[in-house]
Structure formats: C-alpha cells, structure tokens
Image (cartoon, rainbow, N blue to C red; front, side):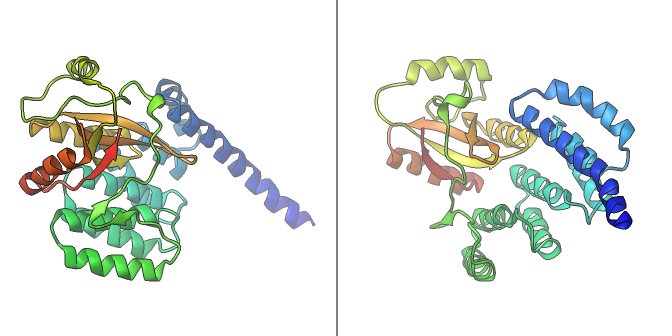
Length: 282
C-alpha cells in the first residue's frame, strides 16, 4: 500500500502540470497568445527539461523558422515523449507549406515508422498523398493509399480522386475573413486591408467557391503558404476551420461564381505552379 501511495504521489505533479498546459492551449484557441507568452517564461524556469513546455513554446512562436527549430529540439531531446509525434507533424506541415514536397514525403514516412500508434497518422498520410499528388506521382498516390488504408482500416486520410479534401467543417462566423476573398486574377499582391475592401464590394447573392490549398494547425505555416502564393501574384486569404477537437487555418485562393470556374482556374494554377487544391463552397 505504501508503494502504491508513493507512486501516486510521484504522478500527481505531472497530472496537475498537464492540466495546466491544457488550459494554455484553450487560451491559444481563443487567440490570447499574450497571456500564454507571459506564463511561458515562468513555466520554462520551473520545468526547464519538460517536452510539454518546449512544445508549447514552438506552438506560440510566430516565426516559422524558429518554430521549426523548436520542434526539432523536441524530437531530438524527447523522442519518446507524448509530444514527439505532435512535433514531427508540425515539421511536416511546415515543409508542405513551404512547397518542400520531397522532404515532406521523407518526414511522413519517418513519422509512420517511428510512431505507428500515433493518433495523428491520418493527417500524416494525408500530407504524404498530397505531396505525391503535387509532384504528379499518381502511381505512388495509388500505392500508398491502398497500402496505408489496408494497414490502418480505421484511418481517414480525406483523399479522393487525386485531391486533398478538407478535414474539418467550415464555421464562417468564427473570423473576420470568413466571407470570401476577392475575385481571382493575376496581379501584384495586395495588402489584407485592400483585400477586405474589395471583398465587400464583390459579395453577391448565391453561393461562391474558393480554391483551398491547405489547412494548418500552426498559424506560421498557414501564413508562410499565404505569403508564398501572394509572391506568385495570387489573391490569397486565410480562413479559420473549426471542428469539435481543434481549429485549423485554411489557405484559400479567390472567389468564383461557380465550381466549374473555380476548377478551371485551379487546374491552370496546378499546371503552372504544381499546387494541389480542393474546391470548397464559401
């Protein structure tokens, strides 16, 4: 009995600590990053060797390159921790957002090999298939889709007809950018303020469609992809996607009157810049 009580005593601080961190993630979801940043410095002093704290610092890091290094530190220092697969998926999302598809494939395979029981495998395989698809390697798409869906019957990779389909339902009332983007055309990138002004003028009755390029849990990844597409002359906006378990930021291009018009432009965009997509209703 004494041994049993002693073990419980040892685990109580860890349990309390985990609960504290969960509250920080809720604050992040609500957009209260400043409060988390203030609390983080104290957490780092109290728990200097905690994978949870290190991972949290990466989540709130606004600079994508710095966040990447932090997540790599989580992997190198705490490869057996509960946050290791989370950190590896963040790295994969970052590589995909940067258009580094070969590296994305390499890291997704590594994640599946190292963490075969991870709850994040569906997202990992999803990005693996998307990467092969962008590189026009449909044989690889077919092979790995069949292989992993057979190996993991319960997995939901959200990939149909050589498209990366959205994994989360859209809640349009959740953010200010949720109405629609400007009509699509090749032109010099414009500021988000100008985009919003043109957005209001172009809203009309009836459904509109956009081209969704990706959806990311880490804001820096979403904005890195947005900036990369803007540099190519596309009109891009970021929109929040919500599910019961988490919130993602979707990167979308343009606003079209119908699905056919959106698909026509998306196919030209894919052919020109090797950009994978899915057509979504606004």
